Image (cartoon, rainbow, N blue to C red):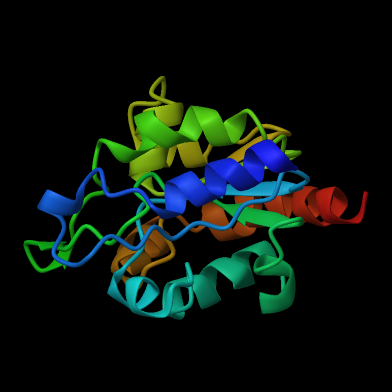
Length: 188
């Protein structure tokens, strides 16, 4: 699709946040207009920045486990597209990855969403949840309120092990429901 391809080229060359980034901009996203699942995440980490691949780390391994999908399926944008809130690695703040740059999503997301018509959208982490589903006061409330077309997930980072331990219902109730929905979306 010409329009989507032109948008991808434009976004790959974005330097909007360059003065605020610790490295040269390297927008990391993977989309296709025919995608079945859309993941709206936070922002790439340093490993993703260096490799040019989103979720190519232990967080990605956990996310793929949660979704019950192979790497091959995960990285096929016709099946699963990844569109982070911030396309570039934002650097560090207080010993952790900094929040996604606030300029990115308002500039790019609506344009991409004009082309992407997923069956299911996954909002990974509180930044995407707050942006797209602000009616929920907390990430925990949003995670516990899935629909047939969207699921909210905590970030799959090891930093969230405490949240996962405190909320066993996520693995017992939410993940199986999401896995069934994803399996259905990918096979139909």
